[in-house]
Image (cartoon, rainbow, N blue to C red; front, side):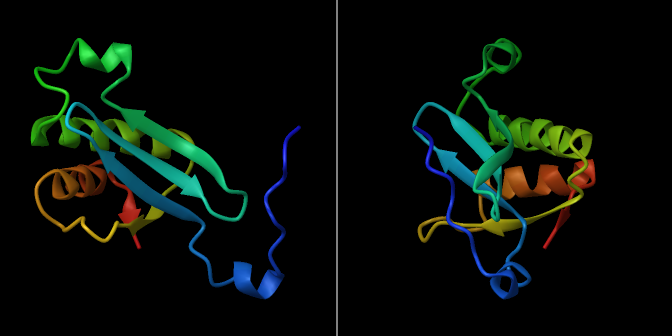
Length: 114
């Protein structure tokens, strides 16, 4: 049984950012996904756990891997016709290191950040 997401009033939907970038870093892997907020679904995602990416990376957890994940995610977003995303950082995440690598590589590909 699938529970549908709650229906929000139209006036609130006007103020929501439709696509939000969320990043997750573990001791082994880097993953990033873009969520479509009104429908609560994943629009696009990339992770260093994917078999096709693991073979081309030296390490799956460093800043270079984060940059590569951001580049791949940006290309996937442009293929899905998503030109702009908003960034959602967790409380402990700062614009430094892996977070900066993902965001900068998204910018280089051509995705606008809100």
